[in-house]
Amino acid sequence: MPSGISAPTSTSGITEDVNGESIIPSSTRADGSVRKEIRVRPGYKPPEDVAVYKNRTAQAFKIRAKSGIPGAEFVESEKPKSAKKQHAQKTVDMSKESALKSGGKGVDSRYAAEPAPEPEPEPEDPEVVKQKEARKLSKKLRQARELQQKNKEDGAALLPEQFAKVTKINELIYQLDKLGFDQDGQRKQQDG
Picture 1 (cartoon, rainbow, N blue to C red):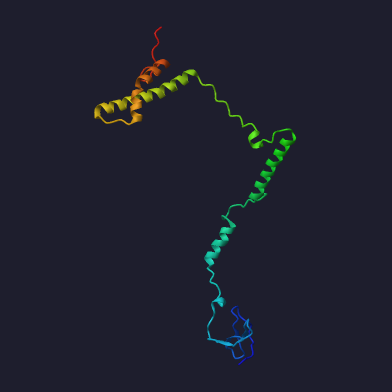
Picture 2: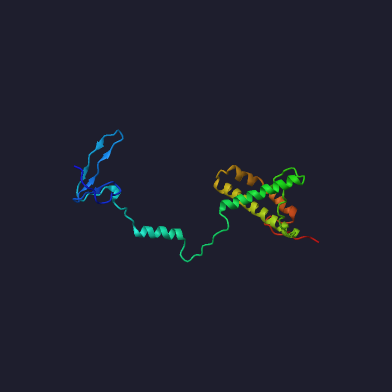
């Protein structure tokens, strides 16, 4: 029942014949046998012929994401990031070669260069240093005495670190005395 075909073929291969009926035309299989023509129900659209639904809002968001932040200027770098890395690597390689040519032992130039000099701290007044040390020692002494008092009042067992602090009370007092401070961290009055 071959019939004349008039309309163009759709994506799925369905065509309309002269009578307006939709058909899948006959075809030849790989083994040489012939498939017969198949009639398609009126109004049927195969999935490959259905247009994909496109949400305008979603498309707008995609376009906006590609364009960046509205109102912001787009600054394009001279080279892509990978090109920058390549350039940096070439620079390192060239510096290695120059070190070898100049009689160097091939030491990596990144490590051979002297580190940037740190700004020298201002020389501190020895009196200020003593006061800082005295404050630290008096704080340690105060904490040790609080632990000792807590142990006496509550009878609570001290942790090994806390016990070590309590046993150093006399040492802390000696260090404060050596710096010229009393047990409260105040400067001792010099007799003279």
